[in-house]
Length: 131
Image (cartoon, rainbow, N blue to C red; front, side):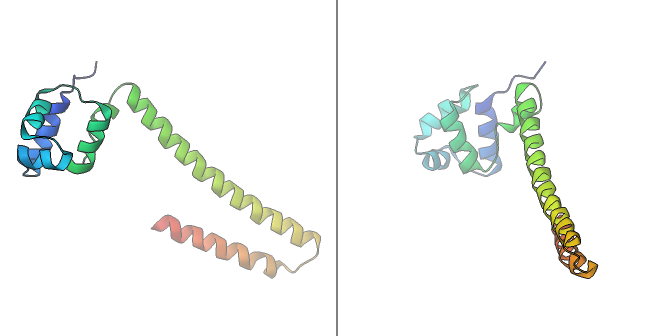
C-alpha cells in the first residue's frame, strides 16, 4: 500500500533546501506569505498550483507518485511508447537502406556504390548512440 504523501510538507522541505523564506516563495508564486504558510499545511494541492511549485522550486513533485501505483504504470507506458517510437524510426531507416540495396542490385550497380552510403548512415547512428 502506498505511503500517504503530504504535498505541503514536501514543498516546504524543498523551499527550505533552496534557502527560500515564506515571503520569497510567495513572491515566486504570486501569493502572500500567509497563503504559502497555509499551503505548507495542506496535504494536497491543486494541479495548477503544484505545477507552479514544480517550476519555481525546480523539482517534479509528482515523481513521488511514480514510485507506486497507477502513475508508475502510466510512466512505464510512456517510456515504452517512447522506445517503440524510436525503434519504429530506426526500422524505417533500415527499410530504406534495404530498399536502396534491392533497387541497386536490380539495376546492376556495383556493390561499392551500395555499401558506401549505408556505411555512412550506420556510422552516424553508432556515433549518435555513443553520445
